[in-house]
Amino acid sequence: MSASAFLISLGQCLATMNLYAEGHPARERALDASFERLQELQAAGGPLEFSFVGGETIVGQLPVPELASWDWGARLAAVGVERIEVAGPVSREMYDRFLDEVWRRVMGRPDATAEARQMAPQAMRWGPLAVRRSAMPGAAPAEGTAALAQAGFDVSLTDEVAAVRWLHDEVALRESLQMVEVDAVVQSLSLAMRSERRMMLPLLDLKRFDQYTTTHACNVSVLAMALAERMGLGRREVRSFGVAGLLHDIGKTRIPHEILVKPGKLTEAERHIMQQHPVEGARIVLEQERGLGLAAVVAYEHHVCIDGSGYPHFHFARHCHLSSRIVHVCDIYDALCSNRPYRDGWDSERALTYLESRAGTEVDTNIVQTFTAMVRGSTTHRIPVPEEPGVPS
Ligand SMILES: [Fe+2]
Ligand SMILES: [Fe+2]
Figure 1 (cartoon, rainbow, N blue to C red):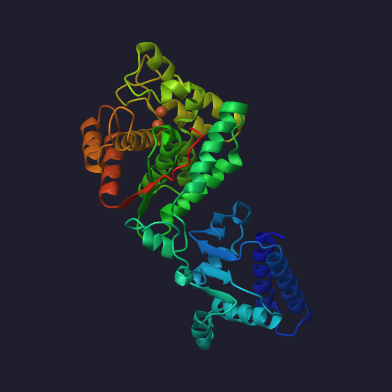
Figure 2 (cartoon, helix red, strand yellow):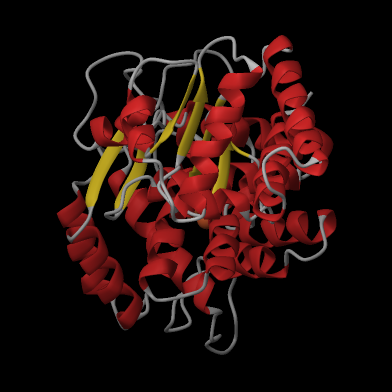
């Protein structure tokens, strides 16, 4: 039994409660069915923590794409039910009471005693995100992490890094780009970014040089989404910029590993090979999926400068797509801030000053201005990438 089936049945219950009075057979049937779904989910040992935030429905710690059009998550969040937890065996009576309390809240008639009751230890809890009690696993949280942890999210981004590594391996070995995972990672990064009311930029901190490709993909995706949002773009565009950011260097999966991690300066021949990655990336994206035109364009254009320099080479200056110009800025910033085999990563301010010095020639002036204001005004925290010996990224 899936968590989605339970949540859908919960929404159906609340809808039925709007229509039928207590004791009506239709209402009882809906409640019976939903209680059954809950019991099946408990018996299957499924995740029993549900969060509704930023238009997403999260089960455990993973967003559920199939519930994207399920509007009860947003309706529940709007009345302060941002999280539901089931911590133990639930009787039918208990479930009825829970539904009644939530329904009253949805209807704008909250039971005054319900708030106090749901704060006490019991099998079914609901409320704002801070109801989660469990602490972050591992070491002392970095600045900004505690608030995210309190909001109920593990900000290690371990799963996202592992998923991107797997995606890259799939492209390298089987030439297959798995869009379901791409969407899931972008959704998850977007969630980490929005977990707090204020702007948060959860960026990964590179520990091993061979992790660069994966951590860099995640960071550029987060930065591109944050910047697109800051520029007032709509939700759908922000998400597609996140996908484009995640895939911008996918062409590097076709570049020999020894060139990617070479600790010194590249030779002319090696540089030529390396500079094929935009063309290779666009080809990979176009070959695999329809509807990814933007990601292909960004993969192709993200090293093209506004004065016509950069690569691929064109005879005339090419006016690149907005998302390519956005990803170009995010790409330079993250590359400069990352430790590389041949130099230590720069601090944020030095990278921002560098971008400002290139505004109008290499990078778009307006985008740089918005980007630098965003980063300087944000809570940026670098999350150490967990050590995972073995598979190079
Ligand atoms: Fe690149
Ligand atoms: Fe890049």
